[in-house]
Length: 175
Image: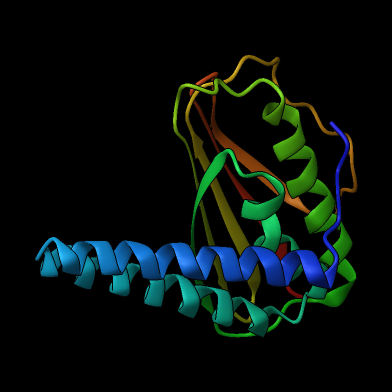
């Protein structure tokens, strides 16, 4: 699979498209007098916006860009992003984080089952001592076990890796 970058125009077009879809969905719920669903949708959008804003505190420009554009570059994933960033992370690790995340996604993406929902949950936490990113992909794909011989400055603990779930924690100790 070839990785792609997005131009500013692409990002604005995708963001506008997503925004219009969300507004149309809320309008539809209201037209159908389904006020509770409309409220839930507004709350979901609000929480996602807070998480996207919160990850900017990481001070990792490449990682933040990757997280903010993954759903547009890899549309088969239904992304949920949660973050609790209390301190920024060492900038030296930025490219290593993105490299690992990108290789993870590319590893399964071309073999995803198009008839199954692919749910990707990413949770990020930082404190004075470390950065932790939890990656939890659920769906269905056909590929071999992921083996990455990259930089040793990041620690990855795999909790589960099957053809229906892949869960790992990426950790970096703060210097």
